Image (cartoon, rainbow, N blue to C red; front, side):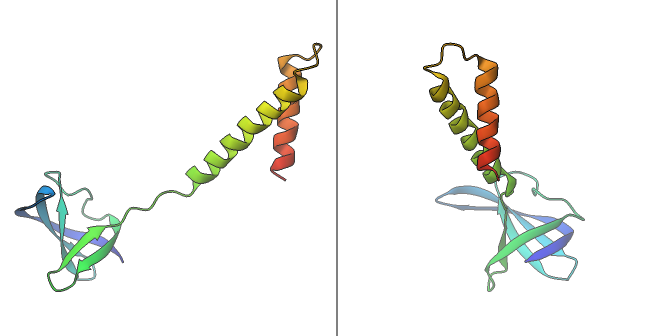
Length: 118
């Protein structure tokens, strides 16, 4: 669920085997109100901010914030692996060629990267 925070009220502490948590009653612009737990003294989000959350227990009115990972990090990692692999391939190709220099190796690596990314 998504909602824009309208009001945040501190509601004391709650403890269990995982530790002690601060309770926050958060009211959204659609009138829904849920209790969230957190380790910090203040709620992680601010009034007016739109957040994604998940109701964990409807009977007790509890919920938790949902955090999503940005998708770009996966493609950056893939590109890094491709670049490293193609530099290694270019180095291996030029290893037996004494006339090769680093500029030639990098140019060939860039050609291979371009070929892979087509």
